[in-house]
Structure formats: structure tokens, C-alpha cells
Image 1 (cartoon, rainbow, N blue to C red):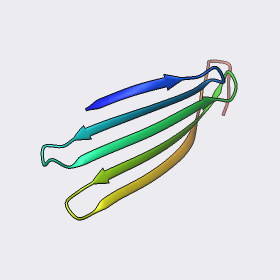
Image 2 (cartoon, rainbow, N blue to C red; image 1 turned 90 degrees about the horizontal axis):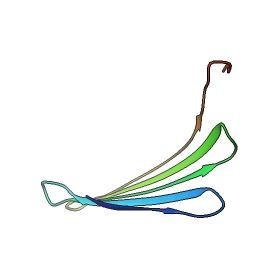
Image 3 (cartoon, rainbow, N blue to C red; image 1 turned 135 degrees about the vertical axis):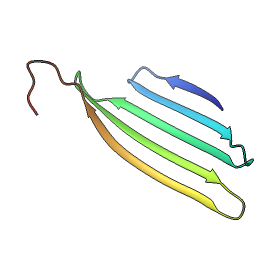
Image 4 (cartoon, rainbow, N blue to C red; image 1 turned 135 degrees about the horizontal axis):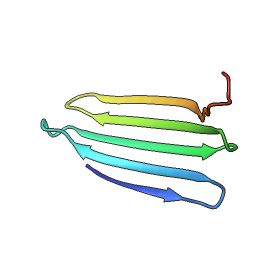
Length: 73
């Protein structure tokens, strides 16, 4: 597995990972995160898999919320 992470001044984080499985299938992951404020971070993830005669694709997006003792959700 090989990967790297990039940062910019607008609080974006982008990372990628590439790997080969034991069956010599190629996998790739591209992830981005953007801090929207002190508590909320937006995440976007793209996953690709190159198998024998099939290309698998998946996209997910979501938020994380930083909870502390005085927060309610």
C-alpha cells in the first residue's frame, strides 16, 4: 500500500492510497476532508477496484461532529 496526504490553506485535506491485493488486484482510494467549523468536518471518499474483468466503484460522503461533555445531539 502506498499513500500520501496533501494540505492547503483553506483547511482542505486530500489523500490517496494505492495498493495491490494478494490476488494482484489493484485498489485505489481518494479521500477529501474540509473543516467547516470547530465542530463539523465534511468527508468525501472515492474507492476504485480493478479486478479481473470488473471495475468496482463506490462514493461516500458524510460529516463528523466533534462532541464534548456539554454538547447534545
